[in-house]
Length: 256
Image (cartoon, rainbow, N blue to C red):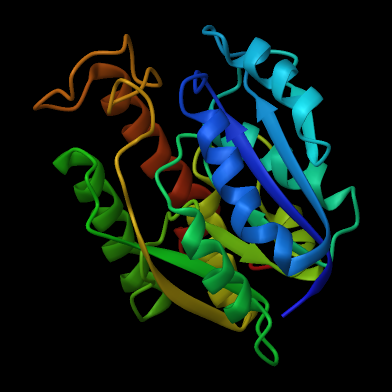
């Protein structure tokens, strides 16, 4: 199993603690699989030491390309920017993963092996044994159930951030999703079904976020995992569900 050029793209926000180990782990397992590897990290204007950590890592890792966002835009737009930055390097396979490091490097070769099966255009890493707060898993389940009602069958882990694409497939998907989408991977999952892409699903282990806090700072100050959804997450969820309905689910919307 060998690729000419593999690009791994990653949005990151306040992941200074976990990034070095996660990037090393990814490279350990993917470097033998491709003649050339590019690792693109888009820093969404982190407020911790992520920028300086990435500057140091660039000196150590020749595969690393760091892109700094002009301003903080949130996970969805940053993920889309990462996809576009990776696609611009003309790889023959592209993998997306979030910078919080909730996956194991050992699962990357399995994802790529599935992508190289005849005809396969997309591979989703379906998270097992998730350790996220109950409300995040519940939100994913609710969106998945709504999507199933519309497309006629369940899409496993509709919002998984661990995905692999052939360039032609991700290029087509980027054309049908707004640049400021809050939940681009939900839109991708639905568009893949409508467009008839050949998708494979690979079970992968979901682990706690790397770093000293399991919750991170995306939804507010870094604290222990709350029992109830933070206000920022509640507001985001309302906007995200409205966006999914408007962009990808609303009956009569224009189909790609």
